[in-house]
Structures are given as C-alpha cells and as structure tokens.
Length: 174
Image (tube, rainbow, N blue to C red; front, side, top):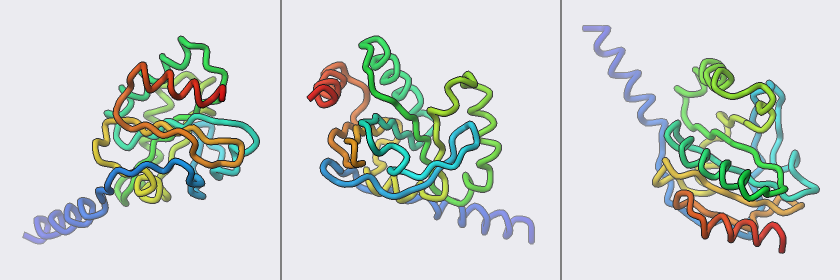
C-alpha cells in the first residue's frame, strides 16, 4: 500500500511539472537569457553566445519534434543557407532534468560527433523558453532567426513549409 501511495505521489509531482503555454509570436523581442549545454558538454549562455551574427534556432519541445526539425535542416541545407543553425532540445520539468545525462547520451549516440556543437540542450530554463514561444502543438519546431543583437526577427511554429523556408531566407538576406 505504501508503495502505491508513493508511486501516486511521484507521478502527480512529475505530471504537474509540465505546463502548457499559449502560443505567441516573439518577433521584435530579445531572446531570453537562458543557459544550456552542447552535446560537446560545453556550457552555453544565450543569447550572448550568438551575438555578432545572425543565427537560426530550431527549438524542439518533444522528441517527436525532431521530425519537423530534420525537415527544416534538410531544407536549409538543400538551399545552401549560409547562417549558423542550432538545434535546441528544450525540455521543462523535474523528471527530464533528473535524466538529462541519459537523454543527452541518447542524442550523442544518434548524432555524428562533428555535429554535437550545433545541439544545445536546455533543461533548467526549459519552461522559460517554452513560455517565450508557447508550446501548444509541441511536435512543431519553433524556428527563430535572431539578429546580431539577439533579437527575434523571424518566427514560425506551424510545421515545415517551403513558403516559410523562403520567407526565412528572405529575412536572412534582407
């Protein structure tokens, strides 16, 4: 009986850690000050890390958002887009933080080592980033283009689409 009560308590605690935030468009806002760790195990403070050049950020809030992120990466590669791109797996809640090492090791196994620097996992500030963009429809990547000062100048969260890719590319060259 005590085990059942303990399991219910733990399950309730972890389920309560995940919050849904209404989707919002953060264009013209400064990217929040958050920290993460690259798969190379380097601490990254954002947006300071990106300042000085435009950068594309692909935020994923669930493992299933990787499909959408991969479509964006393929589109950016096929169009020879010449801006640095970073994937930000952004996970909120206590449970993922407890298993962050396990999660990161799983990602390292599936990603070639030479690409590890382009993947920055965000755990402790995950809720802040999800609130910044909203996390409804979490399978869709959040695509952000930051300017040289760390301000969001492009945002898209409706799943990969060629017109959205073209609009992003226009923002990069404009």
